[in-house]
Image 1 (cartoon, rainbow, N blue to C red):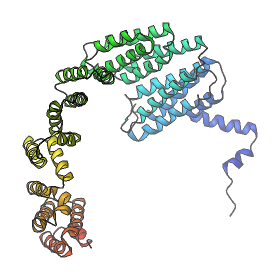
Image 2 (image 1 turned 30 degrees about the horizontal axis):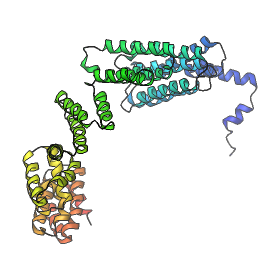
Image 3 (image 1 turned 180 degrees about the vertical axis):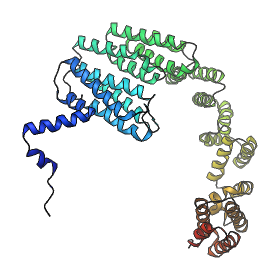
Image 4 (image 1 turned 90 degrees about the vertical axis):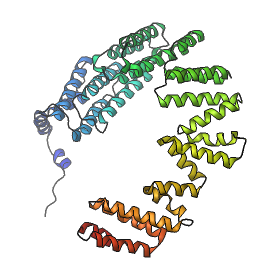
Length: 456
């Protein structure tokens, strides 16, 4: 049988006119292919190349959205890759301004795509982040001596940052502002950027949902002040915005560095009062206050706060608290165990379990397992030597109750996996006894019987 010729062999055998005819036919049938050729090979002026990119981008969108006007989950990755392909075609652009314009086209369409694509896997987000990264790289590559080119680049970024397309996607607007800080060494550009950031903050006024965005914008202003303003100006700005987490953290860190521990304590306490409804922040400010107490050797204050933090779920403070206790360590441990159990919340319970595990307190582990039989598998191996009969009874009862609640093959497999672990604790004979009982009790569940028969 003759060998089928490869496509390259066929194409190489054709004349130039025949190849042109084939390409023209394919381009006529595939708009995306045609526009891709125009982008890659047509060397027109700036506006013509931008227009070709727009057409290619439109054809990419058209290819994926379909009649419903929406890109389904299974197609989103392909869409993002094709859009990135368009971006990659501009990497070799000799003109930085053209490379920027094409990247901005992709950026705007990428953000718009959140409204017409299923981004469950984050492919659209990846596209937008990659595009922003390319814009950063173009900005970094600009000739620092070419002031006019830098100014044009800056103005274009600042203009696009005001686009309505970023409404609801403030992180991307802020990312553009962040790139603009690369040009803040020029005073008039710096003032324009500050004015734009301040305008955006003003636009967010009275909107609690924009607090995160405001904090990020204020951080940019603070960065500019630190780099180009006076120390006094930056300090004043920081003091005015202590109600934002970043600035309070920064102020505490500076106080600690300068050994002004009393000031750090004041800042932390004010944060606790301010953020009373936010447990995560409360813990952060308490931890900062604790470090300041430690530096000042305020042992009584340390003990009280370490205990608060420990009972609040932060196990890291146990060893500090133990070392600060001056009486009998066993008495201290038993009293703490009692307090953790009495606290009756999940954070205290986690500390309790971590503590009895680290101390290898078998008696307390057994108390816990009696009250929580479902925890038997976690503790059986450690408890079986001292509480063999009781562990065997709790374990077997747990297996029976789990089997009783099972109704499909996956759940039956879970029971069988438990039986295999049970064997390691109490032996083959006891395992066999349960298997026989389960086969008798559930003889009308073929799937369960099948899984039980596989146990070796």
